[in-house]
Length: 110
Length: 110
DNA sequence: ACACAACATGCAAACTTCTTCAAGTCGTGT
DNA sequence: ACACGACTTGAAGAAGTTTGCATGTTGTGT
Image 1 (cartoon, each protein chain N blue to C red):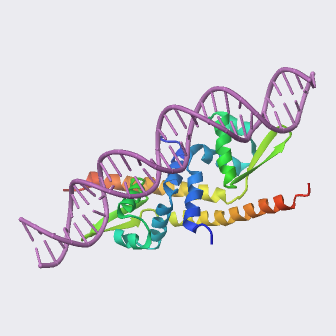
Image 2: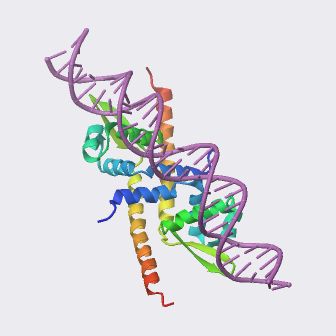
């Protein structure tokens, strides 16, 4: 076996750990987008977008192909959408937990 | 609204983007563990483990409480397990994609 | 052949994260 | 009160990431 599974997982999550890359994947999981379309929807410099796309390409999370003068990107594994949804669920769980912690702190008698 | 959702997601994933933290969450999603139990199962220095636990604590992904002389950690949001499973699914999807890419490259006629 | 649009790449500065060591806190047993 | 085990915290250097600018590459229209 090559890399331990937990390390591969860590690298996958690290790849997702950037706001621009999240937005890209959210947009691509709706439908394919050309780079200039992404550029319209994400506030970021073109070269920066290219860098972030390169990161996603290196991990094979997205693939690209030229169509005439534009380059179109798509997600390579549709389950990415599930991952983003699971994240959303956990996020609401987390704010609930943080709420509890806050309440506890405010209402602790001693 | 505070922080945009995609940024909160990115931070969640960033928190997961470290092998030790993945292992911790995997172990804790099975059952609660005291720090010295984690230490037996994860190859890492005690102070480093503490640092990683602190990261998970800051994001409220885990909570801790003392029981006598030991400190016991637990996951605060059980859905974390789903996220780890989703990651595993995507990972197998990814190696499949990478396999395809390799094949394509090897078999391209021109 | 030339100019232009659409992207990608190289690189350096600014910033963040990781790792380890030394020092500190908090219970437990004696 | 003292020593010890179980953890946590602070700090600093090493390592990795992010961002933007300048420069390249590759198609398209003229």
